[in-house]
Structure formats: C-alpha cells, structure tokens
Length: 111
Image: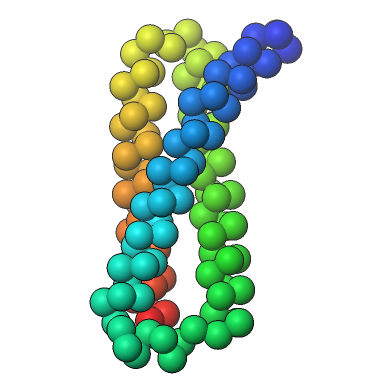
C-alpha cells in the first residue's frame, strides 16, 4: 500500500509541480494587467503593506493549488491513469481559470 502511494505521489509531483509555474504566471499576468490598466492611479497604491498583502495572497493561491493533489491521487488509486491524462489537462485549465477569476475580482478592489 505505502509503495503504491509513494509511486502515485511521485507521479503527481512530477506532473503538477512544473505546471505550477504556468498557474503562477497566469495569476501574475492578471495582477500586472490590473496594475497597468489603472496606471497612473495604481502607483499610488504601491506600498510596503500592499506588497506584503500581495505576497500573502500569492502564498494562499499556491496553497490552493495544492488542492489538485486530492483528485489526482484519488483517480490514480482508482486505476484510471490512462484516461486521466486528459483529465489532468482539463483540471489545470479549469483550476487556473477559477484562480484567475478570483484574482481578477481581488485586484479590481485593490487598484
């Protein structure tokens, strides 16, 4: 049992961790887009507190990204690894779009 879990966890890490860069880049583009769209008013918002607040939100977004391991490990244990290859891509797209939407609304009130 532990050997199987270890193999599935390693498989999940190899798949999802490189894609975290895509997720983070999309969210960074949303924040940057809001900052640029509201220029020059947005530069008045920049302060140490604002930067620390964005840091906290970035950490929370990455904690939320870790939720992807729950369905991934569940499906791997179910024995459906082959069909799950397309499901992983769909989960990445939907999860990133959802996080980008939340980021959009958070940034709408910030800048």
